[in-house]
Image 1: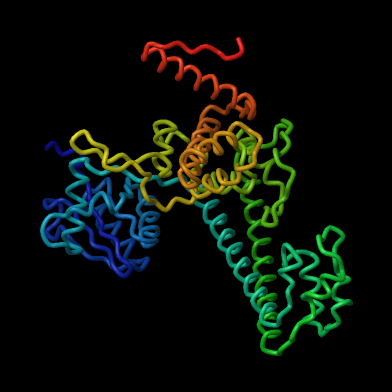
Image 2 (image 1 turned 90 degrees about the horizontal axis):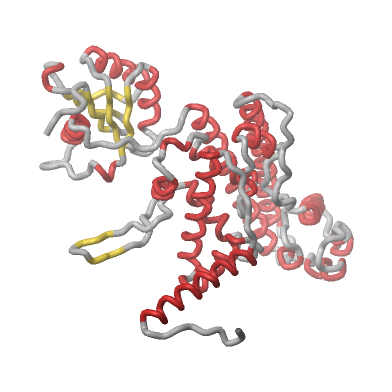
Length: 435
């Protein structure tokens, strides 16, 4: 085989140390171990420079590869992050030394493809968005702790309120923690939009208030509000980051958001305007995608779609397309591959929300659901959403929904054409019942 990368090195990543292999003619000790401390990472980079290395391959092991990846990129190396599943078939005994040598050998012959790694600005936005997502999850867990404490006191607040962390629920909980026990007084916090009346809410607020459960409720409320404060800090940092990036506002009017409904965990600033300025097209026009979900998607994929050959390759990276396994001309399996991809999860959630949508995508989801079942229908609809997302970012073309009725008409015409063709093959001819 022809050697493609003559100046290649392989690194086996570990939590406490990294094993590095270079070509045997570059050093008396072609395999060395370096500790994972920052000073040792710089020594590793200096040694690679002294050995004349230009390109490095490493596995994506946890988060341990990130500091070394950044150090090597700063030093001017071409760093390839490879999928561990593609290099696991090392011959012979498996050790850290043999792993790094196997990586170096494969990279020398050009057999390793680099995994997706976004630009630095996207990595920064990704860190902010993932931190915010983690805080939202923690806030939801503390809401569950509040509900548990209320149930232990037999306060049936969750039975009469859709959300205990809403305006009415938090006002009632604050009064309970302040010492108020009269159900009628507590029920006066009822918002006019509540489904149940004050009398029903008062019945639900007659509980058995024990000190240990009140203590747990107080701590859960404090932790929930702390998470809300930290989420607002994340929103401030994200807004500052978006204001400093991309082209300046040229006065082009921003199209209105497709959905006027505001989520409880929505961003605390006008992210829609920033997204339109950065992207140049309104991605929230795609059914199922909100401003927060679009921002989370861009934090995972970046703005440049040229990293993928086409929309099919993009869907394959997301794990939203069939993963055919064929042997002897027979398809053994075709289900989509199992992968942990945050962008794919967002597309799946957007697809799930189209069940009642009066759009072409909503009609497509309902047709696939009746034909294949919910899981496969969600994957198929998420695949369509991903390809629309890719196309809009690639071509900067606005989304135009043909509507549910037009989709149904097109689908029925396609069915009739197929039936007519099948009848013709059998020697029959379709005749409309009401010509």
